[in-house]
Image (cartoon, rainbow, N blue to C red; front, side, top):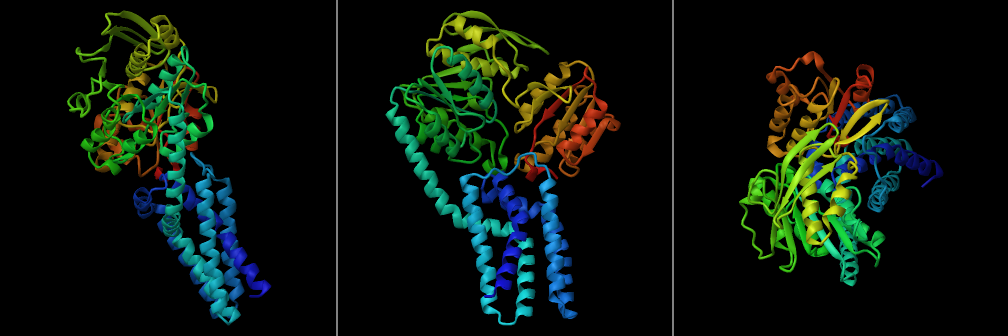
Length: 528
């Protein structure tokens, strides 16, 4: 293999990097799961646009052979490839690629495959001009099939990732077992779990040395990372958020963490693409209660009809939390919601009646607070400590979080919207002063009913929102339909292609007296 050929193979391999990086990025945004990634690839307009642009380059390469100037086609290809790389550098993503250890392993395997194929061609082919053409055509094919190659890389690395996961999970079990006195609290639910986790951590930290899973570290690897890197012998309480987007997820996490206390905040339509049915979601979430030790305690949302009617297959004591249902152990009454926060009375099964205040926005946050109150009382935290902690609670990041951006008033509810969250957000926005703006790309992962839920979301905006900014011209069509059917003035609906363009709209139209709600901030893979 000549130096010339080595240089050519190297240049062609590097020219694939922007496409490889994009494939890695989208695979990561689809949670490294083929059942999510494959449908995304087949539905992505980028895949088909790339097919036609690559076809044109292929024709140019073939034409260069006809005129007996193969290097012309190769140079044209390299110019286009590296030009696209420069453009990609300037592209801003909502959620950039994170080069985790897993992504690095996948990148290594990706390049091994590419280099192996290209080097193999140079050894098989004896005619230099013919070799150049074959190399060019193969790399063009790789450009088109890059996402299918990503699937292959995913399958190749799956056994390695499985070993890594099992190793980390085993290590986490041993660490938690050594900390035998640690009070472990598991929290799950279709929504509300992250806010409940943060509120609980704030309240309990007044009386205990606590650790909680940060941000949305609610997967096996997120939890193992928290335990391995952050848990210390001095910790007394571990508040662990547990996410589930398919069957058996909670079972796996319960087996690893083994909490004594478990909360189910809500059960509703979310991740229907993978759960398929609402019944499956309910069964999986309720494993949080069913797999607790009988010496522990479960805490459930008794206002949720699905949870209330579920027959729990465990004799563990269960504490019922609610705002509406009268048969609760902890219930909120006289709820007053304003643009500045909430005030409400707590009536408990111990005969206590106390008034609490919080700066958190929205009636639904009263439920999140009640969960934390119930657990704190179970751990014998006094009422004065609880009341003081609740009064000083700060908004959770990206969950109805008031903030100032560009000198304008925003309410950031950007994290993973769902029908219930969207409804709560609109109620909060309705109370706000000035012109009320809404920025949203809509909701995803709701299975066959995704369009129906988005259409309902659009219809519910009337009388709650004055100016609507929708991200994604195709993805937002159901929301537009709902808006039109509700009689919303479509002159006040703006459809853009990106979050940055949405910000540009509100920067031009909003004033410091207005309020802008960001409802959901989809990964780039879902904006279309």
